[in-house]
Length: 302
Ligand code: C5P
Image 1: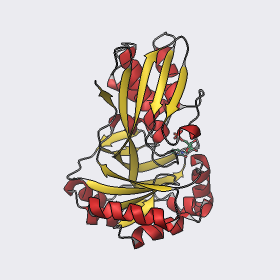
Image 2 (image 1 turned 90 degrees about the horizontal axis):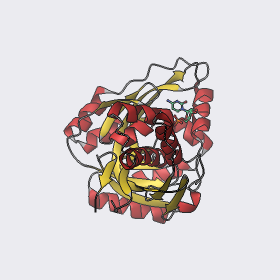
Image 3 (image 1 turned 180 degrees about the vertical axis):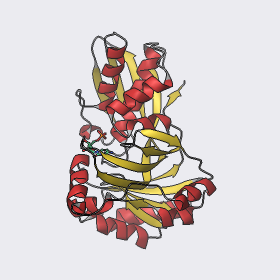
Image 4 (image 1 turned 90 degrees about the vertical axis):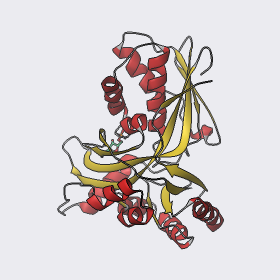
């Protein structure tokens, strides 16, 4: 934190179980969404300014929208509106979370800006109010604030914290270009049309694997109901998944609505070897290693 600015660090996420129910009347889908925060972070710094503006630095900065569609800008506007103040703030995003989709990088920036503005403006919002604003910003945003591990129900925004008994080692294969989340859910609807979509649940085996920190058991329980839809829209992701498992990952899956794919490795050395092999395979733009769980949105102090 500088003398005039407030900096908040926010993690990316991976979904170790994304169970998707049938489309609701409001167009959203009920989920049983098991989130794990991972050690790739954005840092959001807010400083007083004469108008709301957003800047971004980092290797993927050119792909980040700097207008009012950025969740960080919307977070500042929502908090300011609730407290009858003007959202005159400069939001700087130091981006390290890959901009590719499926890792909640935009949600992280929304949660980070919200917490930072609350501190800068001394609005003193309660945890409930912050979570409420997060849910208004997007289904994944409350988890970015909370971090750790949690089961998200409803459209993913209602969180129950989960216990994690160890460190998990991950590799993320970053694809070229994005995948639209609504398009992936739409493809899920198309693929499941006429079938009886079961109510979404998280398996007890998965929750037990998290609780005991057992990577082998977690690998057997990883599942994403959006994966067939993501693969249908982006068939090349099958090559990335095959390359990661061939390189020694315990298992791989599409992260969230993709196109990022996530691979669980048995230890840090294997994770590095899998990342190298994925990059060499030419089936992804780049690959990053990370561990989980990670803390949620946290103030950074000088
Ligand atoms: O909540 P968020 O803005 O992240 O959602 C983006 C889009 O993803 C929604 O407009 C909807 O199409 C889809 N979605 C969904 N069911 C959810 C979460 C997201 O259908 N539980």
